[in-house]
Length: 447
Ligand code: FA5
Ligand code: MG
Image (cartoon, rainbow, N blue to C red; front, side):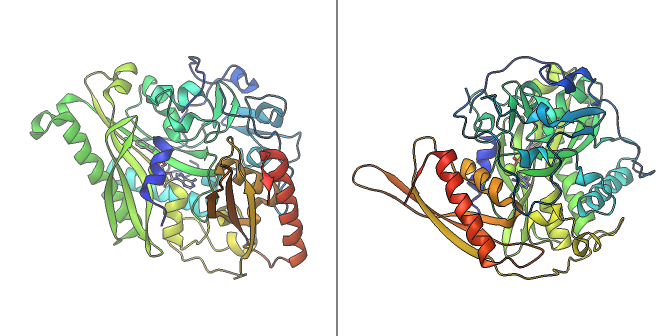
């Protein structure tokens, strides 16, 4: 299991900040008003200084199907996004590769027959049943947001690690691909919303394994309470909101899973206090499925809800869907293979996925002397740029420093297709290209 501590990095460093109301001015997208205040149709209708610049643009990944033609544009929530709006090879403040641009606008969570769409709608059902008509739902908000929305508005300190170019995809120094759906909290509060659910694709530079992917989906929940709601409870506002939050999420877990082993873990987020994570027992391990807590007063005060309290949560849809549908690898969610897509249909939560192929992984090791700028996230991005979704895991297996003070890392790369067997020749070629790219882009010395 990954140590819990690892996830703390998500919310435990650096960017210039400029105040910005909604969408970034630098992007053509900014010309179009934010769709933030337009809820999706009701679910009942179901229609419902940069650390370093490491490399510019990755080559098209081998085997990554459906890479969009470089020049085309997509539309999200009424905002047109063209490749040149997000991939800027000559801009040192941009670190978005083509493999990431290719995912924008796919919106897996809006496909009714996709595990993520089925899960989203089942969560909507829970809120509709228990809080009739109270929660406004948004699932089409533009993932291009300002640094202010993504970080400042939710009190992320200026030196917080999540702000680094190593962790977040920057379109320019004031615009990011949102790394969490919490980026929309402040805007929706200012719009007068008190109960809302925001579902969307989020983007993070991260390591590679079966439960981490650089694009995944989150659902944000937010509920504001006014003083008259807790005054008779004998509790203070914070304790009342925390109790309501746990009750709501435990109810949601039961609605989704029936009986499942779960536990609460205390944690830290800049925007909530107290803060918790919910973990579910899966594949012989505890899997973190959501973060939540009682919203910091400062956020409510700044956005028109002084003297109120609120709870908020952000759940990882893939993580929950992996448990519910028995999906063993997070890459499968992106598969267009009929043998995957045909197994799921609207309204059918928890149908167990039947693996259609069991090809063994193929392991290749590579060792190199690292330099001061080396990070594992950069390595993973280079590997993903070459091998696309054929890379299953990148794992540090050896690490030592010699007498001259040079540090060597040995990484084991697991290659595996979910859909077909790979030939030796194909894997050897991939590994050769990976080695070249790692040497060129990360300026490390191969051993
Ligand atoms: C957040 O993103 C907070 N914004 C959540 C939150 C919202 C807390 C509101 C409090 C109030 P975190 O970085 O832990 O927290 O991510 C939330 C969930 O997203 C995780 O529990 C996990 O289920 C999922 N997740 C995180 N990283 C990945 C990844 N690389 N791939 C897939 N799922 C991920
Ligand atoms: Mg977390």
